[in-house]
Amino acid sequence: MIELLLTVFSAAFFVTVVRTTTPLLFATLGGLISDLSGALNVALEGMMLIAALTAVIVSVYAPWYVAVLAGVGAGALLGALMALFHLRFKADIILVGFAVNILATGGTVFALAQATGGDKGTSINLVSKAVPAVDLSFLSAIPAIGPTLTSLLSGHSILSWLAVFMVFAVWFFLYRTPHGLWLRGVGEYPAATEAAGIPVDKVRTWSLIASGALAGIGGAQLAMFNYIGFTRDMTSGRGFIALGAVLLGARHPIGAMLAALLFGIFEALAIVIPNLFSWIPGELIQTIPFAMTFLALILFSYRAQRARQLRTLSKV
Image (cartoon, rainbow, N blue to C red; front, side, top):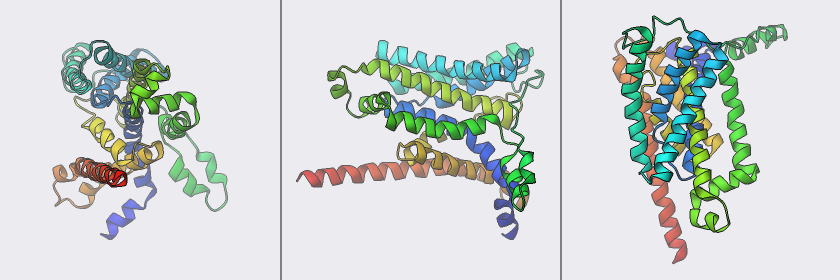
């Protein structure tokens, strides 16, 4: 137990938590934006997976930032595709999302085999690039706390710093701009916003595109920093965990960030615990994030039921 505590409160574990949280946080913010507009995006998993493969393949032939933008574009394109089928062709948003996930599962394997010359498991044959880490070693010059700051803050992905910025950017957009008010209004009461002249379908279209773009950044981080290269089904349910983080975070950017951080901590624990306690099955530890997602959904359901009961009692 002492070894576990020493590990959890170490700088190395903090770095691992940031690394595991970053893809989740991007996907969670994407899920939050689409959810607040009234278009639940259950395709976050597929968007991350396709964006990860796209980023890896493009990084073989282009600079890393072009590859990241390609991943973002792939996610945004899938968001636009969802909007087309849901809003134009009136298909159920949940079914469209599952269709994207199914497409991603099989399509990435096929595309990977074509890109690698037959390998359907990994992109080991492709010399892909990585997202650079931010070097803050100059912080060591600060007296007393310099080395600690360096060990905690240096070496993180550029996209990890972008994720922190995006939390506050999304908060500012949602609660400090007219368009953010439109988006929340469309999700809460679309009939009223449409009567006020706000284009409901247009708002939801852009929310799905933004949701896909954010999920795409998460996929690029996963394949170009957390792991260098693409592996079949490498997202491992992170898109669905992100949906749980949206609900657990009370559909608010700061709450979503804290929920994603919580899931990131459990994922980091699933990485370090097998090295400390070899008698615990690794498969059991890997279920921790999914068990937390399940509990988050139960908590959200209970909270929503209590809120409905309170509204009913207030009307009596």
